[in-house]
Image (tube, rainbow, N blue to C red; front, side, top):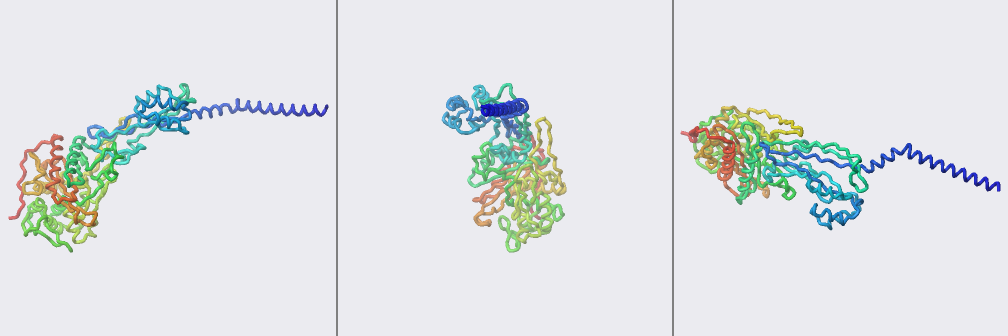
Amino acid sequence: MDQRIRRNRVGLIALVVLLVVVVGRLALVQGVDGGAYANAAQQDRLRSYPIAALRGAIVDRAGNPLAYTVDASRVVADPTVVKDPARTALALTTLLDVPVSELTGKLSRDSRYVILAAQVDPQTTHAIDALGLAGISFEDNPIRLYPAGQVGGQVVGFVGRDGDGLAGIEQRYQDRLAGADGQRRVEVGSGGNPIPSGIDESTPAVDGSTVRLTLDQDLQYVTEQKLAATCADGATTRASVVVLDVHTGQVRAMASCPGYDPGHYSQTDPDLLGNPTVSDVFEPGSVMKAVSLSAALEKGIATPDTVLTVPGHIQAGDVVVQDAHDHAPVQWTVTGIMAHSSNIGTIMLTRQLGNQTLEHYLRAFGLGSRTGIELPAESPGILQDSKDWTESRAANVPIGQGVSVTALQMASVYQTVANGGVRIPPRIVQSVTAPDGRVTAPATPEGTRVISQHTAAQVAYMLEAVVGPHGTAPTAAIDGFRVAGKTGTAQRANPETGGYAGGGYVTTFVGFAPADDPQYVVAVDLERPTSSAEGGETAAPVFRDIMSYALTAGGIVPSGKPRPDFKLDGP
């Protein structure tokens, strides 16, 4: 009996001790750790959502939009809290324009996150929100639009699926355009919807800045239309044009064909998604003579009226160089050499100049180095050091073979001549406007004097003779205006043979107008692998049409001063 009582007492004591431990633990959980557990439960109900910054716009010089972003959302779901997938799908199908079967399949997955639709407009998301569907929520998913389509597309560039710039201004100004995303923390209930009285905290997004370009959208459109027609002629496979403001170096138009629409870049051949005017190089041919003869005049070797006896061909190392058409020796002035585009006359003058001095002027005009324009993938071109020139290379460089340039570089050369001998590096961004309205303009590059104002005037006079009735480019003439410029017809390297044979030609024309008060430079280059036509036949008319529009749209009127008489031949 006593043993039984003792066992009962021991059991009772153990039970009491256990009860005390349980009660103590409960008191500890509720009293001491209760706040922590409650906080953990609340944290489990918190959801964080990014608030996307609206990407900044890209506009032309007048503020016309070339790229901008509008609000939109991604509709997402947590299938684990969707009570009736089929019924929810039926409620969403019309609003999202997605089949019921597809929505039902997504809402039935063993997942906590599925995307039902992307880039849904605000009106639709408001309608969905009003339905109060469990497990359905929204994420910012802005839409990037390119209202001008292909116009300016190669300059503007495009953004990838993650919203980052992948080409053009979109890439170069990614940090300024992107802005900074914000965040929203919200407490949700069992259905995944926000609790009205729960936590709802937001850190606002900071939208991106607006980038204003120097492009003129109307001139850009006309330029691209003319290029499209040129590339449709059956012989031109690629064409590029750059239009510069003579006095500022600002790009007013820049395009190549074929081009692309940034809004549909994924449907475009990847090889066409660049900007050939700054990244592709070509041998320019006789447009280079503006540099070569500028150097000869600047160093006092000749004047525009100096007469040379020019043969039809000349020995250069192991090759014979000739003019476009071989001829008996003829007396031409230096102006005549430019107007008739004489290779031999140009080589004779640059031989007196010397290779090192010629290279100095080539580089001073910007060849062999990047211009620094605010665009990605700019090429410096190809200009070999003069100490490495062979005799044949030394004869080819001054006439635009054996040296490669971009269309932008050639436009810059003629901007220098037109601007009285002062080179202003070309630029394409006019200003950047922050979300708070602060406007910053990129530093204006300092001009560099390359040749004297007197030499520049002499070269302009000679270039005007090229467009005269006895020059190589009367087709570049514009009624009422005085025009100066130079043709180029260069052999095109043939990738199949590794030489020039069968490669066709690159034809060019670069010029400025009015010749007596220059305002614009237009550079044109056409790649024509199956044609033997010359620059005066092909590129000069493209120049004429684009320059005519630029002058008219710019409100430029002729000065009325007559064109001078040009002395092309000797006594």
